[in-house]
Image (tube, rainbow, N blue to C red):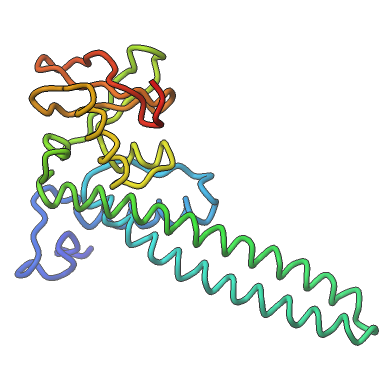
Length: 221
């Protein structure tokens, strides 16, 4: 048993009052790598800051692995093409080309998926580390999930999750929400929740509910 495993064997430098930091980090890294390796087949978990930082680390590892996989696939294709050109090894050469193409395609998919997820993970982690700084982040350090009054879908107030749900960038998401608030003449700059299904944007009320839609994250009304 490792007595100081909770603090990476260095309790003088690191602390972990709730006993979860390093464990959540490792879980997050493993979850991100599994998600990227399956091209999104295994869902990404939602959790605390440590888990999201772990997911970001897992995404970086996935990008490195994906690039290496593309290189290996390309090498296999090249060797197969060379074997095919001899005529004698045409059949195994063609098999090598096909296999190399599949490996390279998977590597490209892993890299693209990981790069997209890395942007979301870093954005959400930075939001929390900064205390939700900036007018469009007020009160968003704690995830809030609700129910859409129009379609019954899941709503969220996290810019990173909203961006991922609607194929936007976190920065673009915040800009759209800012413009919708301005156009709707919303007062008090409340936080908003966006429906994952229909994309409608709802300001949060002081009582914790949702007001009328102020527009759609995709541009519709």
